[in-house]
Length: 144
Image (cartoon, rainbow, N blue to C red; front, side, top):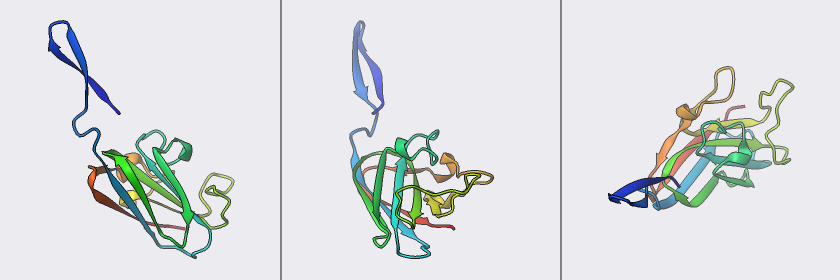
């Protein structure tokens, strides 16, 4: 959580939370466009542009659920700017398989319909604001 120094009086400094910090809410990720209901969904909620979507281990939150569910909820997610990456792990090996040059061979998708050109989608194209309080709904359509 980002913090800022606040000068209260000469010589007196306190840490103050950024505006809106501490607000949490539910993020609902709804996935469509499946080839089949087999396998799993690998869902990553990223807050780091440098890790999106190529470093799933660096996601702020992640989930692995049955593809039949088609939906994931992340409760008590702090307010902030995020991007979601989804992979339809049809063979249920809990990784997004790629070919020899790194192109996914399983369905993938990102928030805001972001798609990559000559590579993965960019964080700025997929980012959205999650304010906390009321649930935030993000719809992701898979491409194969």
